Image (cartoon, rainbow, N blue to C red; front, side, top):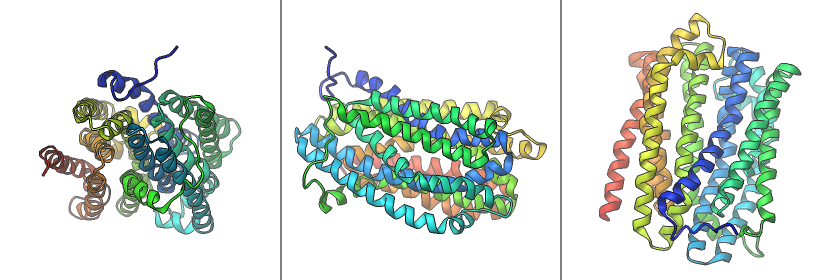
Length: 441
């Protein structure tokens, strides 16, 4: 008989490693949904197609972020309740999340369904890209329920001691997405719509596989009678807001970068940023994978008062996150031309701009991976305000200010320097907050 995972007594390193591969696989393959579309569209349609998909990305981050808001926020609270052996209390958090996400799906359908073109222009669309962005964006709007429930259920299923099911669901969905991208874009010549349809189908497969957990004997995720409450909703929203803000702020940053690049370089600048932002999505996915591998272990042990085990997992997670960030930076410095060629047929104009941009921007990954880990760590140890400060600082405050100011002084180089400056300043803030938490200040 297979040994049940014991988050409170098994070796912390063994637990972390057991969760690490499924978590990184799940988050990394999730990034493939947009990444594969970008690569296929770049090769099949061209640089305007990449620019168009980069304009639509903020909409996708809203859908995915809302799922994480109620997924991470509720799943952490559920894990803590389970750590206290309060099973029904944990199930009430799950019930509240399901009902709230269903409501948010209806709201998003109405808001984006009737205002898609206006939103796309606000996000940086031009006469050259608006029709391509509309073609891709409308399909994503139809897929709202799939995206929200996919991001929500991934967290709940993993925290319910089924990391392999979460991994399998996301991998199968991601692989299907890549295959269907090729079929729809290259074989059936369906253009931007084909890429978006492949993304919706891939996410649907993920949701179906995640739902198999509900038929497992080990399943604790159940909708209970009178399970919804506004008190629980407030707790979930408070605890999950940092994760939501991570996704939304990335969309805001993409939007601001698009607007500034159109102003200083034109559509080619947006196309190059499409390459970089998709590379950044991969880096964020890896960092989130490390953070989410640690999350159920940290949250459960924190709920049980086993702080020594919490600290051990934190140290291991930081070391892994930092190693990933350094490796990604080295790759960007060593092969910027290869990264560019992976997305689009490089013209001299694109190459000259992208090589410089990649070499500068990838430096930010060293600090970014650690910042993301600590954002999740503070959530898991019931310090959502610290997580919120990290997200606001790196995702909205500094990045928004610098992307508007630096180009006035340094031109387009200033745009690429924004994120390295933001991430390293945020890392200093993180060190200060961790010191305060450790000393109890």
